[in-house]
Each structure stands twice: as C-alpha cells, then as structure tokens.
Image 1 (cartoon, rainbow, N blue to C red):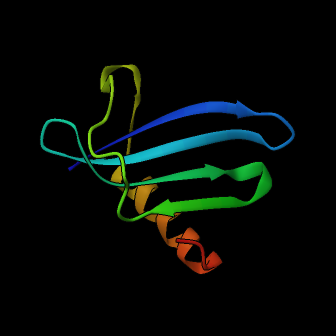
Image 2: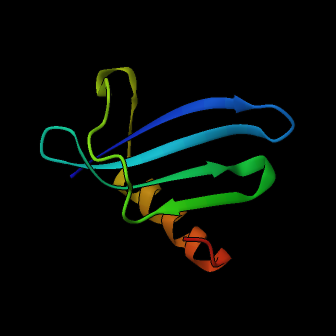
Image 3: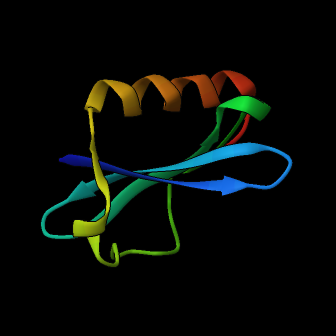
Length: 79
C-alpha cells in the first residue's frame, strides 16, 4: 500500500486535505477528506472512484498519518 494526499482551500472552512490509500498501480482502497480548522473528517471506506487520476501530482503521505486521521473520523461517528 502507498498513501498520497492533496490539499485545497475551502472558503469559510480552511484547507481540505484529501488522503488516499492506494493499492497496486493506482487503485483507491480507501479515501477521506480532512478539514482540521473545521474539525471535519469524512471517510470513504468504499469509494465510488476506483482509480486515482494523475497520482504524480499528489504528495506522499505516511501510513501512520492516514491511520491516525482515519481513526479520528471513526471517533466522530462519520463514515
């Protein structure tokens, strides 16, 4: 598995980080959106998007970072 992330501003909320868990070439296993300033985490355990588009434009993320935020989302009760 490898982990990637991207960031984009969300007006009125802060910066939204999209984190992806990737298997094989570009197959998305899980993904989530994290907006730290708004304390929002939206998890997608079964994403409808299966293939990551242009993964070379994303930053590397650590497995520990992904797992930590994923668990924080679990505690919020969001899936």
